[in-house]
Length: 422
Image (cartoon, rainbow, N blue to C red; front, side, top):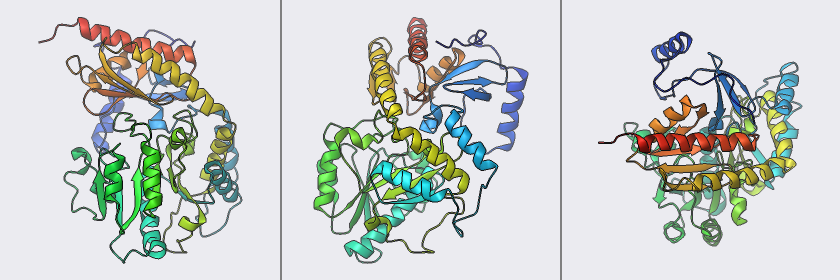
């Protein structure tokens, strides 16, 4: 077990001068679109990070799954270093010697034929939506300008104008209208409602197999299979947003694998960049991605040599199956330890692989307060709605360290229960 060096600051201790100065500068010059925890990180290795004062923390967020392979994975860093010395950017105006390997490797990993590279997850979602509309007009025969995409309530696919247009999160949506039309929202987990929403104008269904931002919300057993059957019967593309859930996070290569479902389109990102560079992609067969012609979509940085080298390293790590098995094993440990806290400060636990959403008794604390208390104890986690927090440590985390983190959560809950409440 890796034990944090030097005691962590105790509750209520003021931040160091270095930490306070950095936070003040960041809040003065950076747009306030995030509300970070009061820690300034400087180094990372594996599942652990170190702040500017030398304090160490177990990273139980892993960059929202962007760091599935931990901080500074040797194979990923080696690929990045070698490529940095060779060629970093050409744009897609020219071929480069790393792209074919990346595209073929990722396509084979997903069991598909083609890859459309991008950078951020939101960019990949936007690309997938464009492809779905183009496919709807060109292949399905939907009248021009009438294509619809069915989405799920509680979704989180990014924060572009188009994406927030079909969000039901007021924080992400309100104040950014007018909104993009063409989307139909149905309750997540209700396959009958989704099937009823499909019409001759429906080009695609876009869903997350597990809703991460919603608090690791897992649909009922059989939901994905029912959605797959409904979309096939209606000649509709099924597009799975596996940006957070894919690439080993849930104990399988893709979260859809848990139900044996193969979507028409995978939307990937986060872990695809190995925690080094932003890499995302839309992966599908030629019958879908083949609708794009030169000039109809593009990305200056998408599929660049550095991204391709890193992405190929990630694909290589996943091809062994080691990380999927590790996630499944450690996920079972995490879920078991967390379930023991239900009734002792937790009211619910939802887990799939090494990914858990836990609902804290709202009478005790908000999710933010729990995460602040965990920070003091050397654990980095992130709250989401209300009193829910998410735990998603890197897949390389050591089992004793994982269990230590749950112990810290248990002690936080004990402290909250013992504290006087109005």
